[in-house]
Length: 325
Image (cartoon, rainbow, N blue to C red):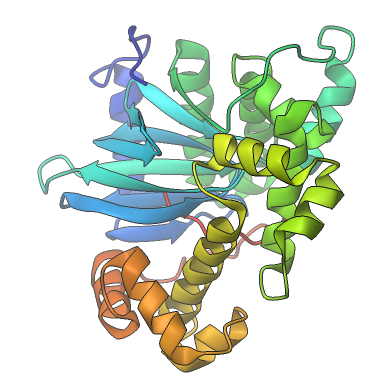
């Protein structure tokens, strides 16, 4: 899905200012956690081939460069003219366009369901039940209002005092802008369990909470209040995969995170995410990522390693997802 209009040009003064702020906020290649929990940066100085990723419910804004996301037979573009909104955690594939001269620079703002719930209470006068089935992912033109909010967030995060006092309210404003835009119905449905989509969103949160344990389709369908056939069809409609394949993918992404960030070996990571057979884990891991666990960890560390942030992180309660910008 490609936007047909551009409201905030990549060469505008606002965009140039955001690019300049990345030299302070995320000077190293790879992922950088900001000082505000729920906001992180990514810098890539090289193109990255199509690879599997798991996105948390988030708002992803690209300040420079370009990404393509692939979910089933759909392609989503996000660059300096359009941003991505995910209302549910989705595994899909993406590739990155970047160079040393023009690195990829992106910021991800987590969709905090507590903040969403508070905003929905205030929006009840103007937003009721939705009547169309929403989607799990949207690519949306970056209009001047959203562009300005993202710029102010970056500026606030560059100052420890502003980050503590101003940044949380700007993060809330960005969430409000999304809720009142075309993507708002999806986030609203995901929280309030409206439509089939909302019930699938509930199942996805259940999977991410309990992926280490025994999960079966019958239980997930029953908890969603659907027949097995309807649950299968609606689940695949949202995630482009089957329920048990989604569970397996979630476990493998978490295992990769444990190996890269926590230094676990493949056997320990496999056991931690619920695999009883190390050999089965290795086979399924290579099938998903195209490399053995050892080789994938080497690749990930070479591409994404960056020093830990020098500033303390302003914490906010949140569920831990496997994430990628």
